Length: 410
Ligand SMILES: Cc1ncc(C[n+]2csc(CCOP(=O)(O)OP(=O)(O)O)c2C)c(N)n1
Ligand SMILES: [Mg+2]
Image: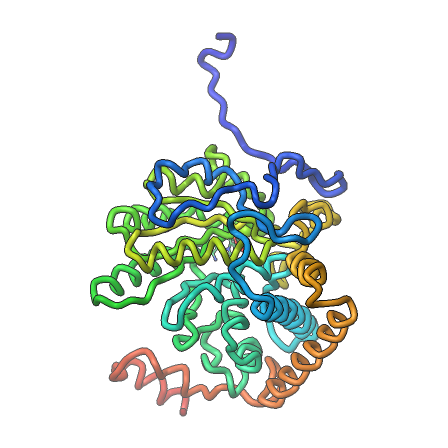
């Protein structure tokens, strides 16, 4: 009663600041294999506790254990490892290209490679992702040519988007990768709407929505959940909780619910949390959620618990807001190392083969980069035509655009 009349509000603070010792003791990590795998037509009310746990398959010894294990062959796992390694190498080269002034902007996936690479392998051709800028693994794991991604990053004469999108905001209908919108959370309403349209037209293609932890604070996220819940849209609602939204820690957007997955519960949406650094767990949970959508059982919300090891973007310096060694302390490890260790444990991979694969992948990425650079980079070589700026929006160009094009002399 001492405080009667004196109101307070609460501003959550991250556990540690730069200079402090990283501390993830507040992240509760269940044992690998300990979370059950319900039937896909389970009554959502009976699995509410899954929104507060973490589904994991790979244990510390590199074994795949529990009811979510055993869905992928050795060949598929080796392919998954290669995709993640390719994305990591691609990232490193493009980050460097940004520093060399060959593009204005880049965003890395370091530490989060398993999320998009493993999810893609659970989809079918024709399914549509509505990604953010941190899911390039959806393209890499689907065999989209790296050189096309680089052409887009360089905004060169072979850029499939003709310089009209921010670097890294790819688009490919054929590869189920909807044009990235820079306005975060719009992906959610677009995906739910697309999924509803797919059902209305009696199609069999499902949609996948993507959002980061920070962006769940946007009202579009909540509006999309209402529609998905009410109309049982065939959609998978992905939340990538990488602990940070630029310099803002996840506790700000998360609210009082304890987890991002718990947001789905109020909408009656089955909501799971998964170890986002475990390729096998991500794939198994994605398959479960995608099957539910495909069988008209409605939406599933999946929170991927991971960590953004790199900077937010090439314009960011995380040392200003978090301890430098925080990523080393992240308790779920590195997705590439964990899958590599699993494959070594199974006897189908080795340190030598890994080193050799790293060299091969680097050579492939460099070859793609050379090819892309032959078409130009930000300040050198070929560029899209100014004329392209006026094309591709209207079936018939309105008079004011025609006038502007004439003024531009193209
Ligand atoms: C609607 C909207 N608000 C703000 C921004 C600026 N912005 C770009 S990225 C970002 C942080 C997003 O963090 P999160 O959703 O956690 O995704 P992450 O970058 O961690 O993958 C912000 C605020 C934006 N692009 N769109
Ligand atoms: Mg984030």
